[in-house]
Image 1 (cartoon, rainbow, N blue to C red):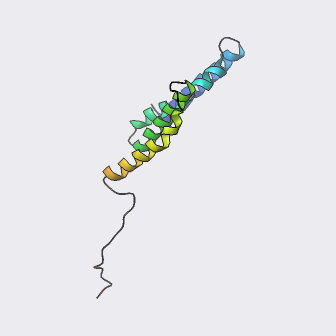
Image 2: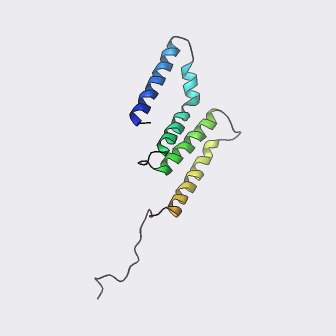
Image 3: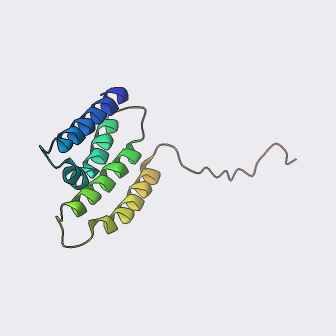
Amino acid sequence: MNGKYFWGVLLIIIGAGLLLEQLDIISFGQIFKLYWPSILILIGLINLFNKRTSKLGNFILIIVGGALQANRLDLFDFNAFRLVWPIILILIGLKIVFSKGSFIEINFDFNKKNQK
């Protein structure tokens, strides 16, 4: 989905929800408070298949959104968001280990032309 369409559809849904709340049909504020982390998950999933975006960044967005959503829904007896930082560090470490290039290049070439 094109970013323009995603944000347009998202604004339409939020606007319709707020309108329905003003008409006392639904309690959109309560629904939005409970499910707003799903927006982060959805953005991460959509961008995961975009070749121009970072896969690692999208995985992190999905994990953060999932942890926030789990906390909002009280799915666990503990704070699931506490697990996010260790998981992010593990993902970054795996990215560094298994990437084709490296984040930091250190050149130990001591046989340069300047040395004669």
